[in-house]
Image (cartoon, rainbow, N blue to C red; front, side):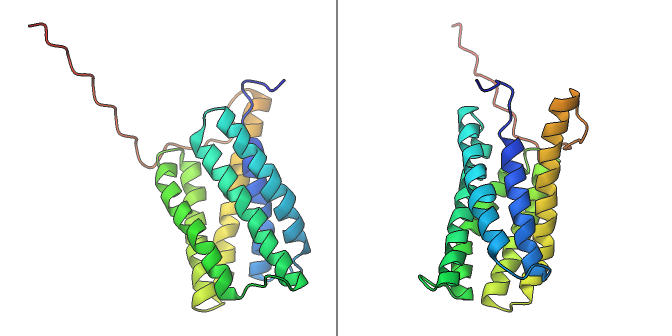
Length: 200
């Protein structure tokens, strides 16, 4: 039976961070083939992260539910595109890949505002992700050289996600916060006080 205190982020952040890191090694130029990206994307960034999102839904965490499931299916679809290009069916041009990225960039920008109200760590992950996606779009539509810059920005994203994963694991293992996540950059609005009922 699943523990009431288990955190799906332990899998979600790990899957996101590991797969994102591997893809950026190709964008930077250190990884030549697409095989590691495809297999990690299907099973670690895709399937495992998607399952983490479903578990976040059960815990009532809408932020984690949305983020892990959407980025999970992003990896599944992205690896499908890579597989199509490799095997010669439903092939996509760099511009096609850019248009594929656009809705996810919009989604990430929307999600970033919520992340700014979560922990500082969530904000770092989200801000670096948005910068990386913006540079990726420039690489698709303007100049491929931007892909290298995107690779470095998204490497920061991947390491930040892995930091969040480690923070969750270490806190449970040691029974205290080992890796602090920091205070939110923006404070949530305080709820309006209830109106007093008239006694007249």
